[in-house]
Image (cartoon, rainbow, N blue to C red; front, side, top):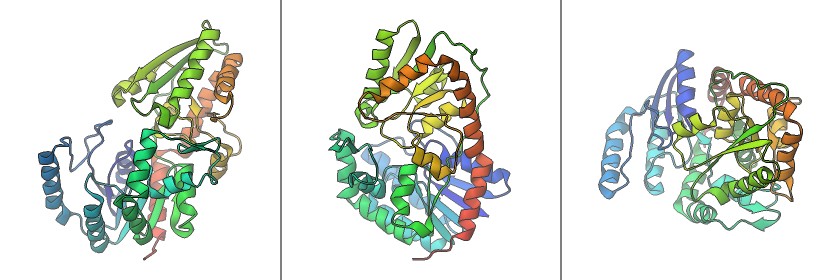
Amino acid sequence: MKILLIGEYYNVHWTLAYSLRNLGHQVDILSNGNLWHNASDYLSSMNNPTRWGIVKYTFNLLKVLPQLRGYDVVQLINPFFFELKAELLLYVFQYLKKNNKKIFLGGFESDYYSISTCMDNTTFRYSEFYANGIYRDTIDNRMSIINWMHGYKGKLNRIIANECNGILTGSYESYVSYASRFAEKTIFIPYPIQVMAQPECPPPNVEKIKFYISMIHHREESKGKDKLYSALYTMHYKRPDECEIKATTSTLYDEYDHLMDGCDVILDQLYSYSPSMCALHAMSKGIVVVGGGEERYYKLLGEEKLRPIINVRPENNDIYEKLEYLLDNKNKVSQLSADSIAYIKKYHDPIEVAKQCLEFWRQNNFKY
């Protein structure tokens, strides 16, 4: 097949493209790049947000558009797949839809459907927008509501979702959000994750657990890292001889990736039912994740035994109790580490993920 992947999200398309090529398919990637990851397999990039930079970027995109024809499959990473005004992206979408056989939408980031589902305060027990029945009034949430619920981005999202051939999702929240509206053309496919070199398992009785938490400037509250951080340091204050903390703020991806090495446990997100890409990457290294891993997520996977994620909820003292559990059961860290790697191999193997995508692309012929 001749495949075009547009946009990027934590190297999902880059990893997928590599696997698809290994399976004998022709794959091109067109993306803004990713300011955090700096992968090199892109046809277009915009690193200059000034007016001149935007004009130059738009001109380069218009030059490359005639080349984006004749593909069997075009997949958009999300509705906002280029850094252009949503009104202009609609014309780009219509051009791609007209000049290629099939076009698919990725539900790989927050968008109109995921936000509106979170905002109904009934589908999920908790989310980034609601916890314990109370709206979480953060700067990120305000901007998301303005852009997606009241802006043209939301309209663009609705048009693409209705007119595309199929929708691929990689998180529990995104799957539920789209499947409730587009059940026949929505699928959940785990993100492709390369398994890193397997680390040596810690000894059966670990004297001190090394925790890692990376704070993201201005987004700590949105992701719940402020509460994770607080619980972790409360634990360290009470039991300093049993735990060690490595904390960073707004690190680049390569630095973040390096700093987590040697740690036993990473604290990720609080308001998620499923693990983020950062969490999955850590698991591929055998690092135990404290974050999103609800039973509904495992049920979606069809997994009945593997439970490598220490699931935490924004309720009462749940975070502290889960951290205390780890300190009280240090001998289980080794097994959780091994289970994390086994889990990634089972569900996130890039070749197997690519095969699932191929099957979905071939079978889906929805036309709207």
